[in-house]
Structure formats: structure tokens, C-alpha cells
Length: 247
Image 1: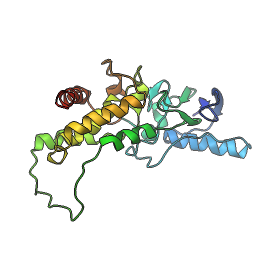
Image 2: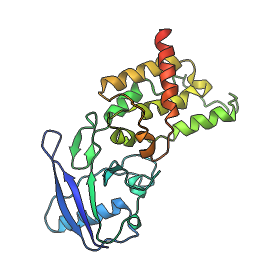
Image 3: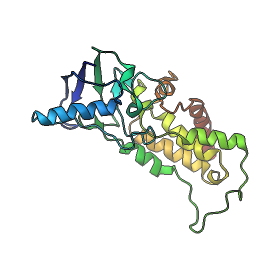
């Protein structure tokens, strides 16, 4: 496959970036998208040019590091797929592909396609945990949990924190991410003692980080590689209001 890549290059958050064009004459349809970038970087290094910086880790669709916008879509055109699991067979010979980083104020560019997502870490630090005493782990069946509630908690817990929801939202809202992290505890008995404090503190930290508000366009749900449903946002809003009323 012969492909033309328009790649965003930027030295750091303080430097203006721009798109640069690269020709890849020998791409394979069996490559993943990140393997394509690896292949391009090998060519750039051989030619004495600076390789393209991009994030990756597991390359199995479970870590959330591969934060790329491909042809205007976070994680690319294939639904419910991270960009590391996106393969070149989804494209055609002769295609021109535009690759850029997440576009959101709370995700400043570190270099090229790499963005700083430590704002998500600070939201988790504000309340995305359960405070328990140290010691041996309790038996798995020590705390009965209904299957319906367990399934909902697991559906929220599969969020990998990639930030695609933020990149897809016109307001750069992090509501889907935060609501998933709130819900994964709200539906388990272990999460009940800190339930009100958790939602209040995490939403407060989200606002302090500069993320926008939700206007119900559902673009976040459409871009989420794990298909987290937007109903968790409504659930979080109800929980936040209850926490503020009883504060």
C-alpha cells in the first residue's frame, strides 16, 4: 500500500506546531497503525531526521496510551477500537491520512502526538479509590453483590482512561471518564461509605482542571473504545446533586 501521512509535529506546549507530509510507499495491510508509525520512524532515522513522538504501551487495547486522532476521529474510523488495534486493512491504497494529538486545553502537547494527561491522574487522586484497612484480602464471597449491580460496576470499570471522550467533545468535557470512575465504586458495597464525598471531590477536581461541561451530544460515547454508556453521566449528576444538598 502507498499512503500519504499528514502528521502533526510540535516541539513542546509553548511552540507552535504544524502538519508535515510523509510518503509511505510500502505499508502492509497487516500492520497496525502504530506499526505503521514505527515503520515511518525507522525511515526517518535512516535519513537523519527526527522521529515522530507518539505514546504506546500495551498495544493490546487495554492501557489507553495510544491517544491519536486519525482523520478527525479519536482512535480512528473503526468503532470500539483503540488506535493500537486499528489495522491498515481499514484503509485503501493511495489514501491520505491525517494524524494529530488529542485537542483539549487540559491535555497540553508534550511533543508531536504526545499529550500530558496527568489531569486525569489528579481527578483519580481526588476520590477515585476506596479507603480500606490494610491486611489480608477478604474471601471473594464475604460481601454478597447482586449480579445486576456487579455487571454495571464492571461496565464502568472497563474505562481505560484514554481521553478519547475529551478529544471527541466540542467542550472538551471529561464527564464520561469521571462518571465511569465514580460508577465503578457507586455500585459496589465497598464504595458506599465515601460515595458522596467521592463524587463531590472528583467533579470539583475535574472543574479545576479546566474541562468543559456536558451538553449531551453523545460524541463521547461514540468515540469511547470501550463503549462506556452516557447514562453514567446522568447517574453522576444525580449523585453530585444529592451530595451537595446533604453537604
